[in-house]
Amino acid sequence: MDKFVIRGGNPLLGTIRVSGAKNAALPAMAAALLTEEPVILENIPQVRDIETTRKLLAAMGAEVELGYGRAQHRTTICARNLTSPEASYELVKQMRASSLVLGPLVARCGRARVSLPGGCAIGARPIDLHIKGLERLGAKIKHEHGYIEAIADRLEGGEILFDRITVTGTEDLLMAATLAEGETVMQNCAREPEVADLADLLNKMGAQIEGAGTSTIRVKGVSKLHGVKHRIIPDRIEAATFIIAGAMTGGDLNVAGCDPAHLGALLEKLAEVGVKTRHTTESVRVMGDVPIEAADIVTEEYPGFPTDMQAQYMALATQAEGTSIITENIFENRFMHALEMVRMGANIKIEGRRAVVRGPSPLSAAAVLASDLRASASLVLAALVAEGESIIDRVYHIDRGYENIEEKLKGVGAQIRRIGEILPKRAAAPAARA
View 1 (cartoon, rainbow, N blue to C red):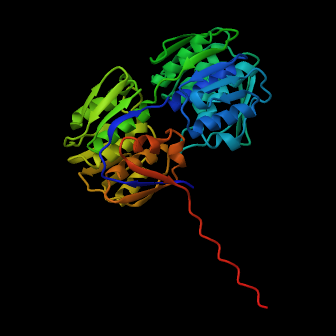
View 2 (view 1 turned 180 degrees about the vertical axis):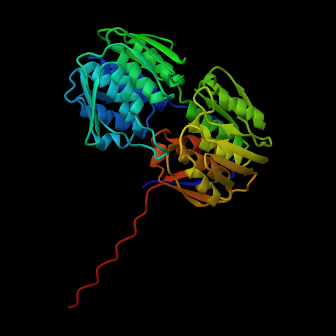
View 3 (view 1 turned 135 degrees about the vertical axis):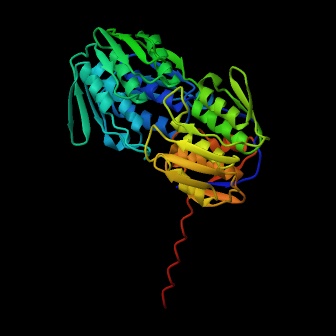
C-alpha cells in the first residue's frame, strides 16, 4: 500500500496545472450509455475512479478506450452492443458514483440492475432520491440481495421534486429524462458546475434540456441520442486545494487551467482571511506571504462553500491567527481527518457537526492515516507546513481524485515522494546438518 513521505517547510513557487474534473467526467462517461454511437471525452483526469468506471462500463459490454501518449487525457466510449445492464457489487463498492449508471441503463435498455454503492466512508449517502425519481418517471423498482432493479418499457416524463439537494440524483435523473416520453420538470436540483457540464454534453448529443445550473431543470424527451466530442471542465476542487497549498506555505503559486468562476465561495473566504489572490479567466495566482486571520465556514450546496473543501480549509485554519469554527452541514462523519491533524500538533475540538480550530499551531511531522479522498488532501497540506518528515498512509484514497498530485507538487518545490509498502524480509532457512 503506497504512502507519501513529505518534508515540510518549502514555499510553493511557480505554476501548477489543474486536470479535468473527476466529478464531471464520471457522469459524462455514464451518459455514453444513452447512445449507440461513440462518445469522445477530452480532458479526462488519470485517476483511479476513471479506471473503475472504465471497468464498470466494459463489464456491461461497452467498448471503452482510454488514450495514451499525446491523447492520454481522452477516452472514447461506444455502447453499441451492451450485453448486460448490470453494475456488480465488486465494482460499485469502490465508488459511490457508480449509481450514475442506473438512470441511463433503464432509459436506454428498459432495465437496470445496480448494486447499492460504496466509496468514501463520510456518512450515509443513500440513493433513495434516485429511486423515487425513477418511480415518478414510471419505472418499477425492486430491491433485493443488495441490488436495485429498475424496469420500464419506456420512461414517461413527469414532475420530480427532490426532498433535498442531491448532485448525483440530479445527474442520474437528468440522463434518464432525456429519453423519456414527454416533458420532465425537476425542481430543487443541484446547481453545481458539473451538472451544467453534463447538460451541455447531453444537449450536444441531441437532448433538449433547459435550466441546468439552476434549481429548476426542464427536459423534453427525445427518442434517440447521438455521439459527440466533449471537453470536460477543469476540476474546481483540485484547483482550490492547490490554492490553499500556496496560501499555507507562504508561496507564490499560479494555479493554471482552472475556472475562477467556479471558485467564488473559496476566493471570497480567502480574501476574508487575508490571502492575496489575482485571477484571469483561466488561472488564479495566490500570494501567501501574509498573515492568515481566522474565519468561520459553513458547508453548503453550490454556490456555497463546498463540503469537498472543508478538510483542506481546516488545514489552513490551523495556521490562522484566532479561532475558526467549521460547520459541516452536508455529510455527517466528515471530521475523521481532524484527529490526524491533532497528532501533528493542531488544536482542534470536535463538537458534533462543528469543529473548533484554534491557531496558529506549529505542526510537527507524524505518521498519519488517510480516511477518504478529501481527508487525504488535507493531510498533504498539513504535512507541507509541518516541521520534519511526515508519512501519510493509505494514499490510494487521494489517487481516486487527484492526478499525479505528488509530481505536480514536486514541480513547484514541495519535498514529497511516493513509496510502496516495505515488507519484512523472510529469514533464511537454517542450513541442513550433514
